[in-house]
Length: 463
Image (cartoon, rainbow, N blue to C red; front, side):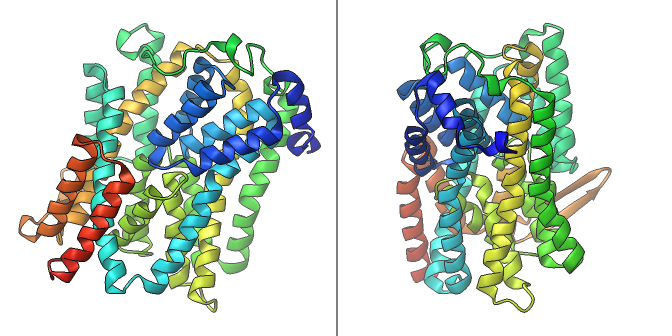
């Protein structure tokens, strides 16, 4: 256990690469405070600071770590920070980098959740969130364009994205099944030498392994060790699951806190492809199965996560907060919501550290593996289709006041009632999308303008 969390890791690491633990703390705090704009923006910030500016790790090592994190369930940017922090300063470094990455988001989402529950039905707050939804929809659409422009580099990848979209939107095929199938296709395609699945070239930093602080040598703590793997897995499984088991045993499986613990623990194991790819499923389950919140409230939570530092998956803290605040037993709504939000956050992120600390040593020895690169490319293509599904699901619940279910012949989806279109919401969403995608306006600028427009529309009686 001492090996897992010893703070002496920084001393040993300093002798290897000359980056002090204190210096690393300041850099990771800076990364955390700048981590706006979703995973693409967060990874870009991390690359600029860690690879180009600080030259802690090489371009190839950064991309290899990113490839692994994209194959994992959970937020890839937070896991990437944990991975690099672990490479630099062992487990203590991984805990510091990964923990700091989510800390600003925890604080910000918690504060906004308190305001939302306390004042969310005040007309002014409702008007602000009306404008916020338009920006969220525009950002999700931008994510489709951004990820698609990188991932869909040939007809095979375009076909994978199209099949993934049709499968999940029209036929409700489970998301994990889509990701597993895409990964297998990509792995086999790369292993058989198909050029469509070859690793794509990357831009960015130009420093090689020899020019980075970490250098070419694999640190001792990054080498696979069976005993260390078993101990690490047992410790993190206990930290993750003992609170869940205790809640279910003491409160019963039907209790809201038990449901939060169980549902988000399940999400931690199946959230492949990042926050955008899984939020449609989370939203549908939270709205339609558990009845914790309404679709518009889910969009409000995503808007909070989009406009605060930290992973987009922090929206799950908002969902847990609302669920517990509305059914917290004898606790006051705010206290129950706080506990529910923190519980959702814990069971979401504890597994992220498990995946990195257990798997990273084995991934480090797989650098350059063609099969892994092929699987990643295919999964990323499929995720584009899943993100498109998310954008349409959000659009249905943002731009239309009514939808009707369609089923039969294997079909299972909601269709919009065209006569129920919300004109002001549609106009605001189009304006936000044009500002962000066409004119490259900053997210915070568009957010402020859209929220102001929401207030003006409410004052004019149009929303």
